[in-house]
Image (tube, rainbow, N blue to C red; front, side, top):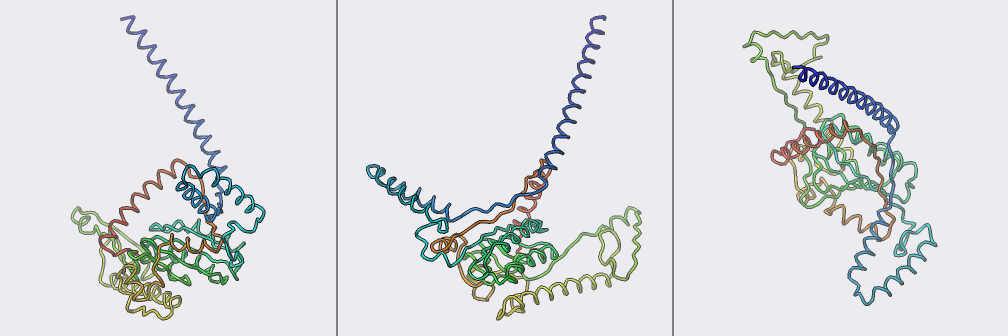
Length: 351
């Protein structure tokens, strides 16, 4: 018994020591995490040359097909070529025929339902507006989005409008989907380019919500909702919805739809908006026929074409994320992929 008592006392001490160590480690890690987070509250703007990246790819591909017996001569010729290239800092590739044609700045926007990516987009656009020459430079936006909240995508579209307001040529490329709020953004551009099977359109508005009133009433649960203002609240999830509330809610949706159509009319002259504002979607080739886009191409082919005569740069704003943020974004990404799958089947994204 004495042995068991001593053993139990020893075990209790050991557990206590381990618990103290864990608490101390947790505290230290917590402090370190807070300091690290505070040090990285500011993001980083990266501007790198896509032209140079394509040059390197071209050299690698060319070297890969050179016979082994000719590699030494090929490498020697490349060294001489690179040496000549360095002498001219204003020309990234000696094959460029007319560098005075201006630079091309490339942005990537892959929108979620709430378009939170607009926080990065606004910084990227600000940087471009500071350095771009409206006379010769151009902005390419590679856009992917099935749509989302009206106010969020309205702000995203307004960010693209800043480029047009500075008289800088703006082209939007859609490789997969620009629907609903995504098309709201795309229609701002001077030119819309889409792949053959990209999903375009969905110019409509949709909203839905469950109502638990009958379930609550069945279980004798009363809900009181007090408002000041006749239409402060229309449809609710827990109260009893009236026909007047439904009518008002539908009227609000129709008003948003009208604003959406008017916005497209302002940006796509000649497009029969009433014909395409049915909530339907079109694939690239059909979208071209109805006037939703201007040409058929992938963003890769467009950039390769521009690369032949102009310097192409990628502009990207990034921000380091904490572990909690990474987990949150991972969960959001899963939900977004689920939403896109539903969209692919139903083709009725929210606007």
